[in-house]
Image 1 (cartoon, rainbow, N blue to C red):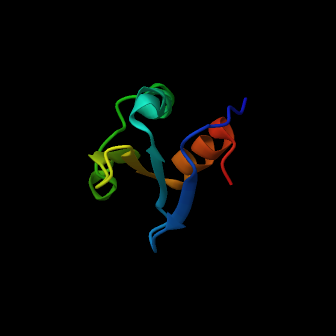
Image 2 (tube, rainbow, N blue to C red; image 1 turned 90 degrees about the vertical axis):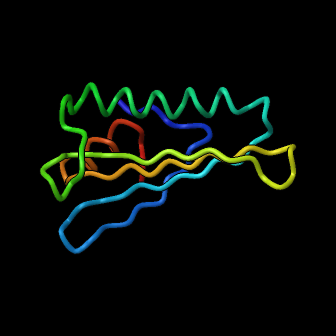
Length: 102
C-alpha cells in the first residue's frame, strides 16, 4: 500500500556503505505546521512499527534513525520543518514502497 505525502517531499542520497538518507523540508505558514507535524509523526510511526526496536546509529547496528528540526524563518509568516531519515537498504526500500517515494 502506498500513501502519498502532502508536505514532505524527500530527496534521496546514498553513502558508500549502501545506507540511504531521505531528506525533506516543508516551509509553510504557521497554521499548517500541525499538519506537517502530523505527517512527520505518520512517517516515524510507520518506521517504528515496521522496524521495531531497530532505531539507532547505523554504524552501531541500528537499521534506521532520524533527525528532526523546526525553525521559524526570519519572516514570522513561515515555519520550516526538516526531517532526515536514514536506514539500511531494506529499510529504504520499505519506506519507498509505503509512501510512494522515488
